[in-house]
Length: 309
Ligand SMILES: *Cc1c(COP(=O)(O)O)cnc(C)c1O
Image: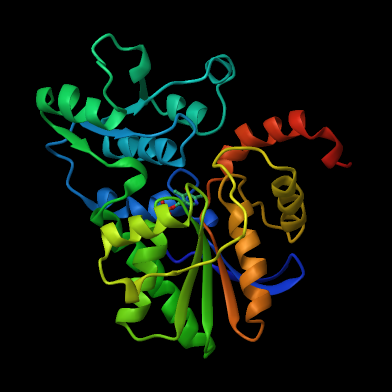
């Protein structure tokens, strides 16, 4: 299983001379950002664990990655979601379909009688975990210190590349959800006093939410990544014509990007690159292209005129 040491490729991406860290090329069942963050779990001893418990959206990359992990470890995944849309139930696709095929139990908390107004996280804490022996709970999207070792391995690969290529002024761009990956990368490069800076952009929530997340994980703000401000707010999971247009242009470099995080990530790359064109730019492709199976049909239905050929 290829779980680390993804290649770094030089590309003309959106007319920019950049390098792409291809974490999308890690193992197909255990790849991308979530595989990095869950790598410590993969190494953990599961002999006392029979159920892996997680939660998030029914389309989440973490759902598929946790389903793969459970299968590899020989335990059951229980993944709690608020609700599953009727459309998805009728047309299982993407991460949802793949997780079901791997034997995941996807539990719709909105359908349960004993929910009593609890959030999904509260429901798990109060109604599931106290009654389950042998359960291992993973917070949403892997936002926990458990993720640090896997992300530091990614940081090490970038640092070794910088050394081997003798590049100074390396700038790493990646889009953020919880900000865990960007924060742990940035903290590593500062702690090693390397000439590598991390720039990120919120794909979920705004800049204030992202700063809050950074502070929760690391109070010393001098170690935080820079946040690129795009000047307008996009809602996570919503369809924007400029996203699909940019995505189509970006994929022309021969790499398939994903459609939830990468559009804002690529916008941030364009903006940051233009402000500092003499630096060496690396964009981290964090995988998640299985979700395109869900997103592309939605885009085709909503903006048919933007797809030519
Ligand atoms: C989870 C995920 C992210 C966000 O990672 P964070 O560490 O939560 O910021 C970005 N891109 C992809 C493809 C992901 O699966």
